[in-house]
Image (cartoon, rainbow over the protein chains, first blue to last red):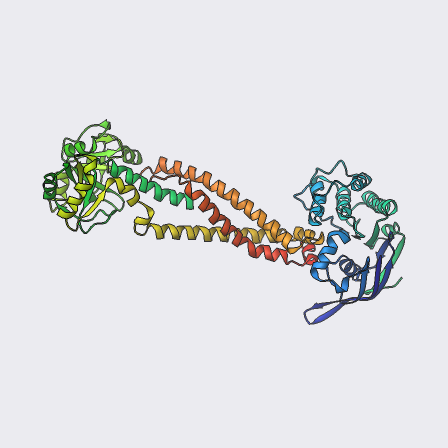
Length: 221
Length: 332
């Protein structure tokens, strides 16, 4: 599913080169739920951005479902984000002027699937997420936990091969954190969604099948 | 702005046309050194007798125009002759003048200045309002031509000569005869006055309108540019979200341009509605500046607004489309 070998990322800040990733090797099997943990500055977010096609790697190879991100153009990485990966952010990142339903629909629209027939699988997912009765509300009328579950629905509406979650419980209280993490685990177990979750919270990481430790731009365990 | 100014220019020309035709003359003669809209130029009063003696001329009378301010003028007429030519005034208040300092004003002028019969109006000298007449008869203010000639010498001159043919079929013949007889004088047929009083024929009006439209388009462009620029800045994070979802630069640019088109169309409709409001305001508070609703310009003004808005939205739109998704998502 994901094969990362010798991945590096160097940012040029003025005259200084910042080595964010210094040779990451990681394999994630299809249907696996992996948590990436590590302190601030360890390179977790950079790895997240590269796997999501938001920024290109500097060197190494990153294969997602056989596609090498290093060889991808901007357009190809944009296409990867449409259907290949889905994002869940710490701050939910819902569009505030749209309802929950419209926030999900816009992801289908961007992927060119707005006029496709309703997806029965997705209706089941909405029930699983427990937001099927809240879809006509705007984000400001939803709790943090509900907003994050809408964001999860948006992330998987186009059946991505990989769901990337960046500190998905970082803005939530314990109760909502547990609910969101349970939802992620359910999605993984019931529909086989491959999930890579970045967190610095050991309790959140415990929901994953496997925990990967990062430090100073490398995977250390 | 465009619709109001176009409406004002068209309204004023329509009003001029209506009032010129309200004189009742078939042919309008002006001095050689005059132009269609000027009040300058004079010709000898004796021409009236000469023209009256010509074949197929039923009647002719002269008028004298005397400017009293930048936009106002008094018209001197011989009342019974003008009545004969125009069919007579309809008196809404008061009646014909009796004293040399009496003046007749039309209802538009009366409404604009809040005057009634019996009031006094100061036009460089004080005039007594003898009557208020229905508008549409050549001018807004009338006094006896002899008084005006006496007040503003040299006497014995007129500014305009209106000629009535004995039959409408003879207008062309009278016109041709006048052309031969009054060499160098400006002659206009009243039937053609509508086309003569067009924006194209009025010196400086077309360039003025063009400049106003250009200013309106530039102001519109700047407004949209600043609005869209601000909107793009405010929506940096939202644009980042769209990019994270896989939105291409074309998708984001398209969304912003669609919003711009929607705003331009809504703005144009609002502008059309506001032009009705402006017309009402002008009719109520400045009735001497008649505004018209020019439907032909609705589409033109709409297209100008749309073009200005789209040009103004392109740079902010491109800036949004090119934003780095990671930086955009980190924007607070």
